[in-house]
Amino acid sequence: MRFLVRRLTVLVAALLAVSFLVFLIPYLTPGDPTRKILRGRVNAMDIDPAQLESLRAQYGLDRPVLVQYADWLATAVRGDFGYSYTSQAAVMPQIGAAAMVTLVLAVGALGLAIAVALPSGILAAMRRGGPVDTAITTVTQAFVAVPEYWLAPLLILVFAVKFGALPSAGWAGPAWMILPCVTLALRPISYFTQITRASMAEVLDSPYIVGARARGLGYYRTILRHGIRNALIPVVTLLSVWLGGLLGGSVVVEVIFGIPGMGRLVFNAVHNGDIPMIQASMVTIVTITVLLATVTDVLYTVINPTVRGSHVGS
Amino acid sequence: MSVLDGPKTITPATLTPDSAPAGTVTRRNRTRALLRQPWPLVAGGAILTVVVVVLLLTPWIAPSDPAEQDLTQRFAGSSAAHWLGTDQLGRDVLSRMMHGGRFSVTIAGTTVAICAVLGTLLGILCARVRGAFDEFVMRVCDVLLAFPEMIVAMFVVSILGASKTTLILALVVGGWTPFAKLARGVAMEVDARGFIEAARALGCSRSFIVLRHLLPNSLNPLMAHAALRFGHKLITVGALSYLGLGVQPPAADWGSMLAAAQPFLSQAPHLVVYPGLAIFVTALSVTMIGQGINARRGSRS
Image (cartoon, rainbow over the protein chains, first blue to last red):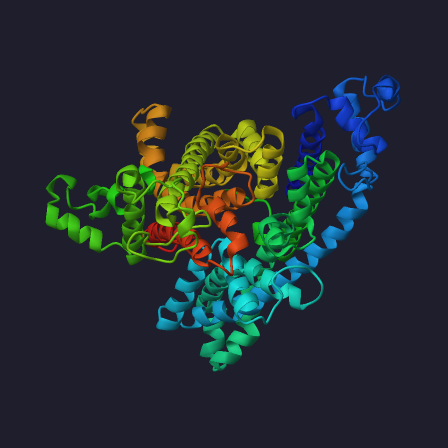
């Protein structure tokens, strides 16, 4: 119970913190904050100086900042972040579309990562200390050091330019997903393989596996029926953390491959100084990330009661 | 940088068994002790040493001026004059990479150093003080950890504008939290061990215990973490520069060199291959160091 309260406190604090910081952007950046805020509200390229005073009063921008924040938050919770400076359209629908694209991309990348990492991690654990284990461990550990903005151009060079087998950029169908997903999957493959190997190795050493073997259950049968299921718990936890991470962390890949997802949306917004879009996209990304992390933590505690209560050093 | 220097910083005293007094270590023992290290630690340390030495000596050993253009020699391949060829303005790629690497490595190094010091001090403080302070710092960590690094960086850049200082600041905001959590955990673990209680019983002051016992005993896992983080930061710094949010032209680091090379991908692949390779090799070397230190501690994590 105490754990749940703590998680929810963090959740709420994170959301309040990000919303407040994002609310402050017009005040912290150079230029007149009133004009910047009004531009996003009345959807105009610039504000007529004659109307400035009446608009300021109409939108309550003459009140104290904290009151304005409460007001802004109340509007934002209803999904109204105003109008984008660049596209002159309401911000939220654009974010919805972009989030769907990124979700598809992230699920594709994680699916690929799981498909590669689970078998290799289990295999490495079964052959612990042998050449297969060394090879798998070394290669996957090296994956962490590969920059995405290096791998992506190299993949484009080989598969799009040389062989012409895959499209180099854009977002028009499943074929367009392959190279970005491979690029994004590399790092999760590394982490998933290592954690699968570690947890599988632990399971294989545990008394109930030794017991099952001693009672004459075949090696592969033991692993399939008893080993894998228990080795998967940490992987599932990591999976949802990565889902959150990819939703906000695929900026570079989306920019390189020209994918109209959340990452590129944020990047373009920052690049163009499109304040309503920056605010909405950042709040959305952090909300999704924090929600996923909280749900994961709570589920993990439900699945595995031993972690409840004592969270020392976690 | 000294934390990341690999095998060199490992004093013989920590390597030899407790029975051998540190004073009797000879040069041969030292070499042998070095070779007894896990191979990733040795290999990673060697690579990193080469990279750091080359970058330090760059002003004297770079083959040519990184800004010198030769438009008759655009997109040239490898030659005796230009080992790694030339770029779209006929500039020497190797020289540009050596100068660019100084940015990449110092920015990543500074960031990790600040994060490590700040995080470790806060973490150990939490472990010593406990109570409300501990709870507060840990919750702040949780909140900061929830924000994706790229998004935090973008936020800071959107307010302060792109520059080297902004970049470091943006990465420090969330970067100290893993160190704080780790240091707190390790310090609590060490705290519960016998020799701390002995020191306390002998009447040692709190600060003495922290500085002479807690900190040295927490150092190995923290060093491993710092090495792994350095590799990660190097890649993130490159990513932000790649997006035009970091080092600003005419200066270039490995990330912005990659971005500049992108339009000429099919025409001159070497412009993409080499700077990326530099990031990969450097990041790999520190990753190996981190894993080596972890392996030496025994597979505890």
